[in-house]
Image 1 (cartoon, rainbow, N blue to C red):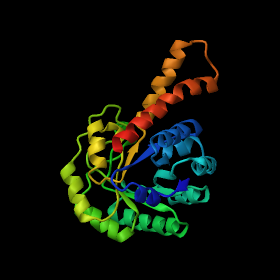
Image 2 (cartoon, one colour):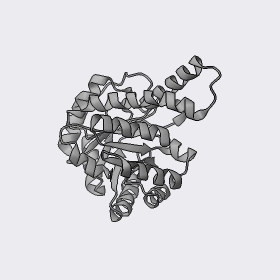
Image 3 (cartoon, rainbow, N blue to C red):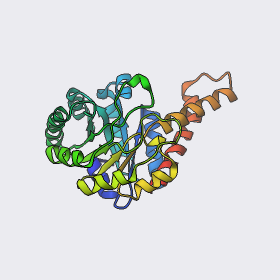
Image 4 (tube, helix red, strand yellow):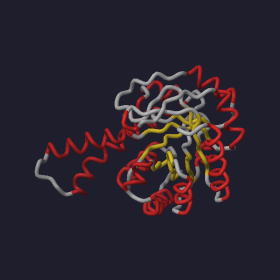
Length: 273
């Protein structure tokens, strides 16, 4: 069933929603199957890399139909859009939720553009996520600043924009391949005291398993995961090809490698719940 992030937040009364970055049909299907196996709604998220590889006008209808056919609630979410044009394209392409990422902008410009996105998306019934502070990247080529979220800054940003959920920087980093992030729980608590809005953690593949569970039950409402699925796929595909060096058919490779992605998604969903 296709839903928005706000709908999923209402379902998750005592633990966080798992949001997974996906790149197309196969991994989206594995995430949905993981949700169905655990009885948990999920978010299928398209980041800028995925949108550069396959245009939103193709991804949107595909993922929307998959969400509609799923046996659990599924949001189709545009992740980390930095241009309002991408938000408009996502709205037109059937996404149910969007994120405007103005974390690399000066705060007044971030506020101004986020408010514009809220107007556009809310008019069409979509949920909106935004970011204050900045979750950096382990890849130095990304050249994105990392800056922790300050509680009062989060409060003023939320009050000025009216977003439906707020991504905050509390110790995680995007694209970490090892689970070594140090989570600042005192900062999470202070932000929660300052704002009455669902909080989102990005870059959570780098968080320890016990931290995923702890954050989920400490009031965080969405936890984003992507690298862990890409690692599972890469290792799975390597396993398949090493076992059969003559294999070349894409469908056969996918059929054997993608269950590893479902297993990784299930494991993370169960940690949150």
